[in-house]
Image (cartoon, rainbow, N blue to C red; front, side, top):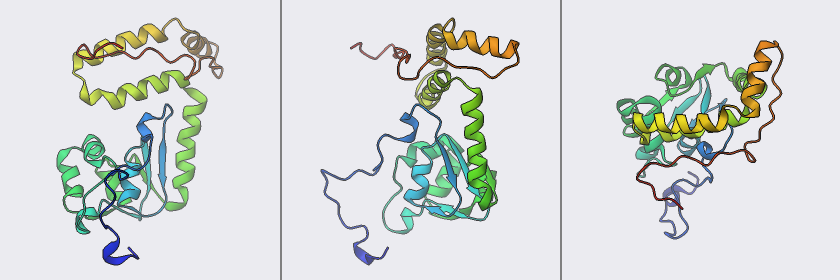
Length: 210
């Protein structure tokens, strides 16, 4: 805010985007964890909302303050925030611009967990290590994409997508390895690649074929 009244001066229409980070975290084919061990307001929070999992500091302040500065929320927060906490709680943050603590953010479901600030990063890393050690990368990537896509699909479409994607995964090397590792009580050794083995993604019946 050091620029005073020029902070939110008119941007060049051809170069300005209200969501300045590409790709969004939900388009990354790995889980993205936000470790917020300090205050995150405005864009600092709305970008974090694009992540799969959020860990907050109990006493830190969080908020989408833009309406208190004469502008409006950004980074697709009108899409992410209602999906995370529901319409009314999203309105309570987007339309008031109020600040909340990490503890309140956890209570309203905005973040997965609120912990002391010095344990935010270790908590996030513990979750990341568990995912890296125990889950098949391709399975997680496929599930993540469908999870973020699902609000725009009907239950029948989700069933069809799940079925088609199961046909891609079942009988493949990682499905065999996952079962064997469990039976043999050992760590799995995943073989499939998110890049090399990515499926032809199912389409909605209304979508044209390439």
